[in-house]
Amino acid sequence: MAAEEASRSSPRFRREPKGRVSRQDKYSVLLPTYNERENLPFIVWLLVKSFSESGFNYEIIIIDDGSPDGTRDVAEQLEKIYGSDRILLRPREKKLGLGTAYIHGMKHATGNYIIIMDADLSHHPKFIPEFIRKQKEGNFDIVSGTRYKGNGGVYGWDLKRKIISRVANFITQILLRPGASDLTGSFRLYRKEVLQKLIGKCISKGYVFQMEMIVRARQLNYTIGEVPISFVDRVYGESKLGGNEIVSFLKGLLTLFATT
Amino acid sequence: MTKLAQWLWALALLGSTWAALTMGALGLELPSSCREVLWPLPAYLLVSAGCYALGTVGYRVATFHDCEDAARELQSQIQEARADLTRRGLRF
Image (cartoon, rainbow over all chains, first blue to last red; front, side):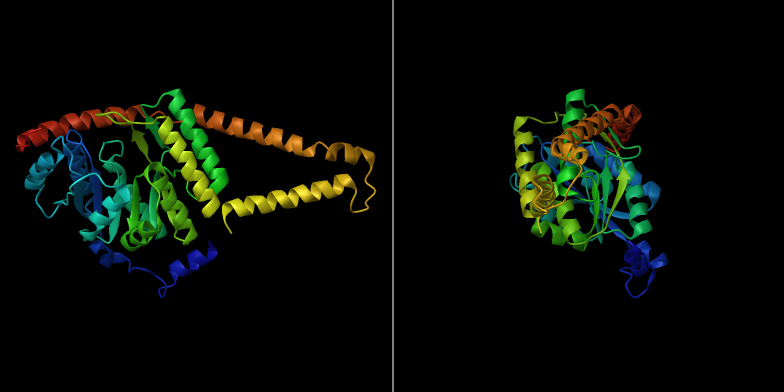
């Protein structure tokens, strides 16, 4: 920690100049979508609202994986409304993994920071300015939203879901000691080059993918800041947590335990 | 070293220390009261670790924040967004 402080205050090691130059920071929001026709207009509207109020420079990159419900049509309308410099459509033909969606989106990102979040309204864009402030405050490589700390929390979870979540989190903390409290959340801000490096190293899918990103980040000595977030479970569409998810989570957890 | 290896090392270290002390392999003359505590120590530790886990998880489940306000705020913003986007010509 002391070394970190020292490197931060020494101009030689400072990774980016502060003050007026950091006004040129640009934030690329990656929104991977699959059948999010109903949610997409609202998430984009909220993103635009949040960024216009906070004044940070941004772009929204929508990566639609060939949704049959017409998500792409809505996305094109939004592009017309907000302009193609703010809304970038980078669709893919069919459903491919989340990791490749981020790689695909990043190829087209012009920002030096990348924000990843779910497009289903469970992550509220009002937290993004807090992420950015947190990042600047500690010059972090990653800022992760957390449901498990401070004012963070969830809405729409029953007791069973809460117990599973807390147990999974507890076991993960004990086994992996990852240095971040919310490993399965996917509302995060990354330095672009950090995300690029991490994605190349991560092989898992689903919940475990987000977890692996943090574990690899710790291995590579990246710094992680945390911001409490409220997670409002899917308003439209249904959220999924079945036996299959739990089994694959455990498999992924044990794999990381044995290999990292 | 992987996390698994770290765990195995720590367990091996603690386990062998315990075994050496209880078996008297070090030639130490421990008072009998000490030995009586030492012998079931792993079981005590296991039980207290279990209690700690249950207590912690229970407390965290009970204090898991329910974000009612966030959900209400989101709902009203969705109404606002719908009106604004309709005005701008979005066909939902």
